[in-house]
Length: 99
Image (cartoon, rainbow, N blue to C red; front, side, top):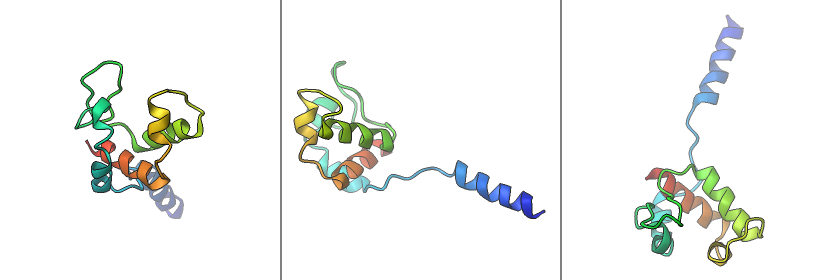
């Protein structure tokens, strides 16, 4: 019986939704500059810019960090990511994930 309860607790933790460490409201306020390419609600009007709405927060943070570190090269995104703090990235990611 104890093994069954332990297994149930582990499954509950594994299946629990992951929440972004960022603040979606703060991310919304910080997203104004992103809107020029990615759209006001994270949906780009042009095919060359990806939609950010609904993107998983961890993925967005990973990509922003890669742009900032120079691991991912893009002449537009690299300078946009450079001034972002880790908290800025988390907030932006939380906002776009919430859309």
